[in-house]
Image (cartoon, rainbow, N blue to C red):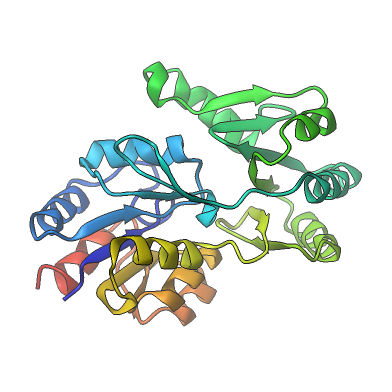
Length: 273
C-alpha cells in the first residue's frame, strides 16, 4: 500500500495555465482521505509551491528548490536545507556574466534577479493578483556580486533561462569546472545549479526518514530531468505523458499528460484502486 505521493508542479500537477484541474483536486482529496501524504516536490521556491498546497488543503511538508530545502507546510519550520557556499556562487555568477545569460537566484524565500524577465517577470505579474502573504518576494539587484557576498550561506539555487538552446548547452558545459555543484533541468529552456548531491530524490530520502515511510511505500510523479532522482528513490516512479524522454525512460509507468489529468489518473490507478 502506498502511503505517500510526491508530485512535481510545473508540467505535472499544473496544466499549461498553471492551474490544477478539478479531477486532479478530487483524486488528491480522496487520497488524503485514505491517509496518504501528498508532498509537493518542486523546483520552485517554498512560497511559490505553498500556494498550490493551500489550494489543495495539503498540510504535509513541501520539498522546494529542487530538493535544497524541506519545510513544514503548517508553520514553515525548516526540516532540512543545503545552502551553497559563497565561493561557488561567485564562480557561477562569473560564468553567467561572461556568457550574458539571464539567471535568477533563490536565497531563502527571495528571488534575486538583475532584471525582470522570464520567470521573474512571470512571478512579478502573478504577485499583483495575490495577497501579500502568498507573494514570491522579488529583489531586483544592481550589484549581484555584492549581494551574494552579503547573503553568505543563504543561497539555495541558481536558475539560468534562455530560448537559445545552444547558449544553454554552452554555459551548462562551462559549469562543469565547478566540481562542488550539480546541474539539472526542469524545463526545456532552463538549467538549475545546486550543491553537489542536492536533488529531489535525496530530499525525499530525508523526508522518508522523518516520516518513517519506506521507499516502497512512495510514488513519485514528474515530467523532467530533475524528477529522475525521485523516480530512482521511490518505489514507483511515474512520468507524465508530456514528460521529456529522459524522464519517461527512467520511470516505471507513464500516465496521461498534464492537460489530460495525468496525476489524477495515476492516483486513481495506484492509490484509489
